[in-house]
Image 1 (tube, one colour):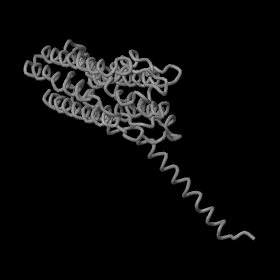
Image 2 (cartoon, one colour):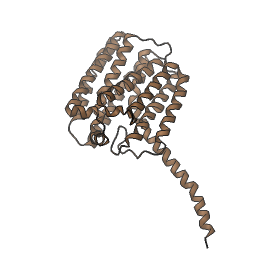
Image 3 (cartoon, rainbow, N blue to C red):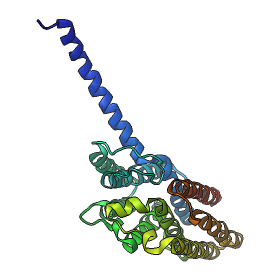
Length: 304
């Protein structure tokens, strides 16, 4: 005869088990957003706002959260659903297996972001919409721009550099296109382009096994380093030109010198080492470069 106590125990354990799985799935989804890592991109939106002399307001704060959580986080989770990385990726030394919420959750998060972006303003909405479309084209197996070295490189430079900075520019509804804004957007694209192949050096084996051909694979270690230095120099020159066009001579000289730490960082990252060491190097380099640029962007925005 069955024991009624055992039946009651089984019935009581089911809700707890379901709750446990739901909490695990939520945690998995939040981890794959890589929100701390997204802060390395934060200086670009602040830079764009400084270029446009946008006021630091509630609209800016909401737009900042929407871009970094809903779109940077959402597209990263969308990419993780298809990549299923087992080794280190940007912001995660040991990524967990993708959970069942990753794909629908990433799309729902971006949908929510679009709804809020419409409140911020139609130009900000357009920037977010284009960024979301680029995320799909970049990751989805049917298009898979990520597996095409030049196309993926251009998409990231435009998406994270130009659109990331343009999001800050268009936060101010009165912002107008001017030479110093255009130079600033070029600078952002070049600086993002300098970092992008470096972030692929420690993922070469996993990318190759997945069938992707990345910029780092196309260029090789030495070519990746050279490209990073050249684009860093171009980015510093464009940033200096932007400051000069805005009548900021001191800033122009300061920004021009940014090529030195960027070049030294590229040489350090590209020095031969195992994948885990290269991961730690590029992570520290990104954090250092982002923090330095972020401090400058915040100070400039504060004093506009």
